[in-house]
Length: 373
Image (tube, rainbow, N blue to C red; front, side, top):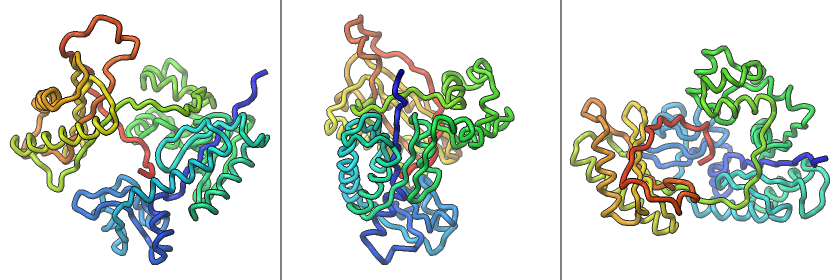
């Protein structure tokens, strides 16, 4: 008989803001947002005091300031956040090496077999939370369950400083009462789609057939079908392979002239090349991301036969992709981004090379739910 997996999800509470409040006592108990205080600045993390005003991650700084005139904006100090993250990761490694970081402030741990031979995952989660507090002065919330899907939702259940366990026998009741927008992969647009279908809770979702969900949501339909039944076989992956390198820039003012766009595209290519050199990443697919003033977002991709390593390769492709974007003074651009990713699976390497370039699918990306980054 297989041993039931024991998965913990550790999620730091208001991580960036908490670090700033820890290091500056004058910020404690006050509404704080970490981000750049500019016309196009975005909130990275908001303190719980700020969240009471409706301020959240990925929100415009200007909107946040209107909602909370007394809001304190703090420029981010990423080195401090990274140092705290490494301290937290060291604590986790005292219990298991099966750790899958999702960002600086959250990670999955598989403690089915753990270094300290502690039988209950909830005891491990409690230990980790206490040691994080003692070592860093920061609080964390933890979710414990038999799969990643439920552990992640559980970690957000009693924030801040929460600890929630979802046992296998309780999973169905727990999922049934979930609002669908709390389910992984259900963003704003997908939630609206589900609401039009009469799906508001996990129980509603479970009543839908697999065929119907696949018809409405494609491959994600199978994921939603399984999640509604508490099924998530994804392992905790401790060795992460980089799949892409990207960069983007939000402009202080929207741009619409061809000359301004070419200049910004050039700067974006330069930054992308710096990141490729720093990471040593190689890929053949270049993706252009464009966000317009109305926040409508599109991507365009091209794949080359050779690895993309130089400006002479990337800039012409970027210009070609940009040439297909419909923009104007009435439809200006707010953000430009470029990314390089793997074109094909590793198994393709020995096959015949593809044509010099081929067109890939145009994708509309839906934003993920708010996170601390």
